Image 1 (tube, rainbow, N blue to C red):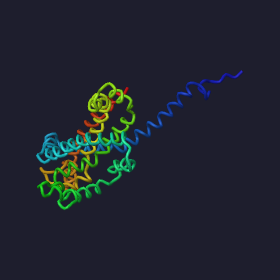
Image 2 (cartoon, one colour; image 1 turned 60 degrees about the horizontal axis):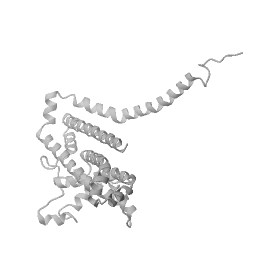
Image 3 (cartoon, one colour; image 1 turned 90 degrees about the vertical axis):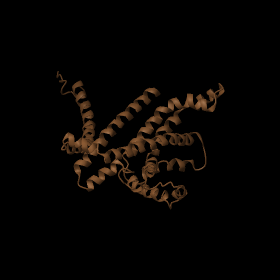
Image 4 (tube, one colour; image 1 turned 135 degrees about the vertical axis):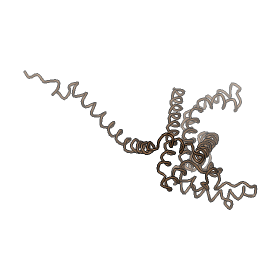
Length: 286
């Protein structure tokens, strides 16, 4: 009688473990290789380039007056744009979910227009519409309010490109919410405001925060539309991404990489905050 070895038996536990390891290793290898090629290596190259500057020089470039002004314009304007979209994006998501009206599908598709539209085209369109002779800008020009080629124009561009993040983050949560809970609150005597504040908003708030954080991070990194709608004058409406490009045009690679490293550090901090918000949202939903 022949006794088969466990190693040679294709159904043995050892062979099964080997096959399982092989199935796991291949996807992980492809994933790590792709991430390394697309993300880790470019980031490492930028950090290595920035490390060529000594700490004193790095700090001097990163905290120069023009850089601090660019940080202020970039992050503060992006924050204001994200908060505005947090309010109106939630309202748009509510209307799209809770109301039926003509051309609803078209309106729903228009929300995704900033995703599909090239940012340079968006900037050119915004600069034209909000210029002193444009359809909207001409209404504010007699009041002494200039929109295009100002910090206000930068804010409008950031609102435009970050709006879909809030709408598409809040919309699925609204779809999953049961309207019976709201009706029960109404039956118990709660007003519409009380129902929204105490019943609808608590489960919706984590998704609103997540959408605001995503819109904020998208606005911070915007370049194509803002470079056209702004005058790009230092200490006025110059944003950090444009400042990096200007440094590259001046062959100041060290200065560009230093400012880029600062932006990277802040972006990683925002990414960490977004992940915390998403974890909080999952824990709240659970």
